[in-house]
Image (cartoon, rainbow, N blue to C red):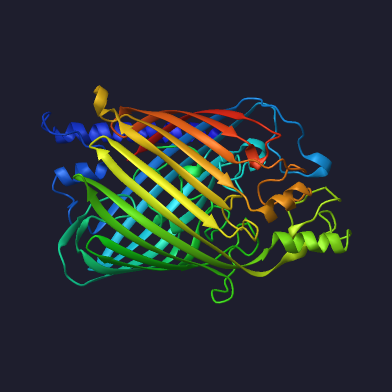
Length: 484
């Protein structure tokens, strides 16, 4: 509640600031309303949005979720600890972010992004595989507000000709003209999703869907700390309508934990992506293919099972190394199987605008399913698809409505491990009647004041944690989001 009060104070202060600036400027009422200070400065001739040497943006987001009670044949069976609790629960997240960028000289850009978060997840963030209901939730979240540096990186641009392209001023992007054929090198602290797997209709979840199944591929176990950030090096080559990206980043020292391991040639996450932008019937679209390969100190499902079957003392309660704290003495545990292993996956991402106010998306990824989840969600294969419509069709330009459907599967080795009572970073009910985990996410976003949106969101989840003995689950949410 303290964090929510802070957001309200900051939001009201920002409104008064923007109103005061607008009153000083006395803009032409016939002109299009602008929604942030950077645009106001541009109108006053104090800032060049088309060729920026600096910019600053910010956002506040508060999400309150409520889960209905749901049926479950069992919960945390035999001392396993990772079930979604069947009783009604409330969850919330609040974030405040400041995006700062500067161009010290031509071709070089520096970005710094401090962030504040407070959160309370459902059931301790346990019991959902690839369909976690709130994308803002972090694995080490706290009810007390915490400030951290989410990003601090440097970008170098080398230009090689072609057409001149205007990059729009935005958070984490300086406005400016660049060649359509260019090489961009980025080094520092960031989220890999800042650069890879972008999608216009399923990615900016502070204004779109709430469920994490629509943030990226649910089966994309990208290397990251418990907050979703990493340190690494990325190269992007743009050639007109084509783009090729390659990234080498650091994983956490232990799965789903905060500290990173600084051994970039021993433990790492590599990814490559090929992107092509096109026009179909006069409307823009894009296709992206992404592959990743991680080398991490992680356990294989079959190794954990074999260790337990050979010696029942190697169970979930006897591990002296890193483990998730299961009390099930009759179950295998990944603790006894961790060693340097390889994890790989490949996915395709498609977006297509159908009309000026309707867009569709699709994502699908296949990961090998041999090893534990190390940084993202408990999912081995996933698809998601849906669409978003702008409110211009009913005279509400700043509104939007969307519906998305996500499905997830786990490998047979993963399912066998869970059925024996094992747990991983997020799931493990003590037994498993395997089913396809799925979610329907429906939202309506109401634009109420320039850069302020309120969103109502409904989610229906089938087979939580891939378990047909539990669920379905209904989750309702309200989201407030303000940008400046």
